[in-house]
Length: 281
Ligand code: AMP
Ligand code: ZN
Ligand code: FE
Ligand code: FE
Image (cartoon, rainbow, N blue to C red; front, side):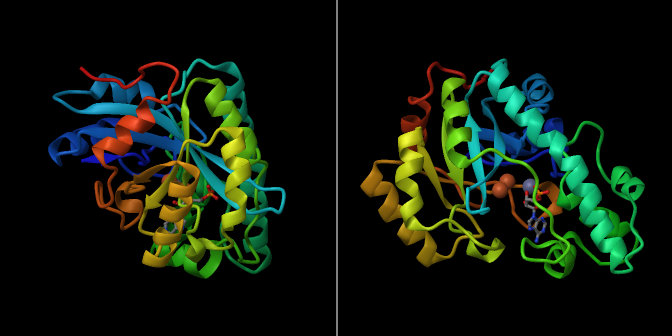
């Protein structure tokens, strides 16, 4: 079972890298990608926790914004974690998440919700990329909503009046940065329309020119129809097709291995990195 998109407590997942690696091993995952939002901080702990036959494809999920302001997530896998330009891009993105969080809190306060930055800090694990799920957890702790999911549906979704975006590179810039660092770029859930405005089929050619390697097709936020359209695009543009869980621990319903990538597509993707960076024991 090959699962190429998961999160830990170094972003908005609820399992530590150690717990995630253990869970992947015991659930029959053969290749696990760890892709925290805008961060590689989980890599070290994950590598140290590696045991048995499990292989790790270390990466990050890079937050991007198109010129039209559409939020896009780019999975970067198998890149050199020591690449300065890519680390700078990730750290710029993390930095702008803090003033952005303050603005979202002000928006909520303006509407009478009793929530503070301290509440959100208390819900954010040490070293984590701060995001809306941590704000959601703080709203749950304050009994303003019952769950992360309710927080998103009621208050934090992309079209909500409380929502604020943060600085992010364009998808093309993030692809170029990932490829220059030797890795491969797979666009995450590009047609997940239920999350808000999503990409259109005509956006893919410019992503391919920038060096895109693959499309995440099998993902719970994409309908059967959306998956079929993506398969056609991938076949036309000769892109790798992936599937993954986007596991977040108890932070989301997504279960490890609920969607997977075939061995053949994984091997094709892996061969596109500039060197073999899969970690095994
Ligand atoms: P941010 O990066 O701060 O904009 O927050 C986006 C994150 O929120 C993504 O990683 C999603 O996984 C997460 N998210 C989106 N919708 C939901 C939901 N309904 N329940 C839990 N997490 C969600
Ligand atoms: Zn997330
Ligand atoms: Fe995502
Ligand atoms: Fe994700």
